[in-house]
Image 1 (cartoon, rainbow, N blue to C red):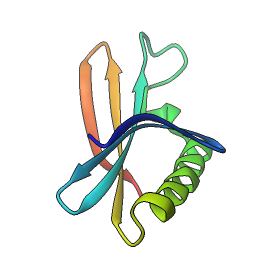
Image 2: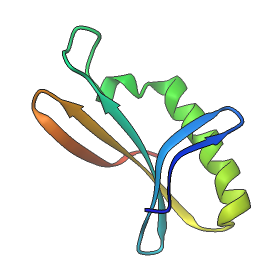
Image 3: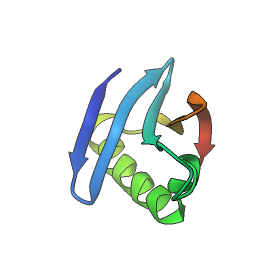
Length: 88
């Protein structure tokens, strides 16, 4: 893990990690119930857009030219699950 709870103008990235030569930006979503939708569904188009923008800013400063990937970790009644490469 490189960092947790990274706050930049425009938002926050839960986890920044490295997977070999790739910088991985991880969004963690938990849901106690499905009442307001699934944990994965909570990472909607607006949230993905925000994460992409924050990640681009971070990469420009900390790792120019690095490969990047976006993962989502969901936590719900079924347990925790990693959605690798959840969006581009």
